[in-house]
Length: 264
Image (cartoon, rainbow, N blue to C red; front, side):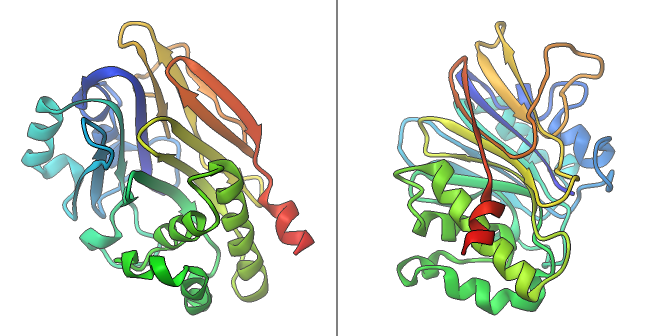
């Protein structure tokens, strides 16, 4: 499974999350400890917010540890809201368009997990993307598809409810035409103002997710795995929850797309 990290708070250099810690995201790309695959070498990406509403975006197909441009970028760019992702493909090709994060307008989105049997109902999934958004479908991943469907479900107005409805539609498809597990996910998304994160699975194996407030940095890190071995203060995000991070505050709400799927 993929690994990712996100940050919101006082502006810091991206390297303070992505490359400098002992168990940084780049370290996790070749030595992950809380997922089935220790190696995440099918590309990487970074989205960050600055003075403009739309995020900057840098993605490539190289392993994160072997790209000197990534190291240089993270050492020079400072941001108060950013997200980064190292990819372990669940079947789609290793290409720049399939690397996370994905962006649309002010929104950025990244995902770790799987939708069971996605290849068997890919056409049905594509049909759920609103026509006016389909030109933004650049890759072939289930992650990008669920992001665009969530935008169509009203991400601007209510991120939790929109992603919940989109997830329910994919669960229904997986149940009808796909395979187990119907959905496993952790995801981060942002409109450039707040950071949102979700952890969910239709079985008992939701991917790991943590958050921690750092008084030294003045910000919140949300990560697949803690950034330092043995470091205290990390809080586990429970499964079936949606979190809104706004500076040092955390709002936790239930995330229950399976109920919507069953009611459909």
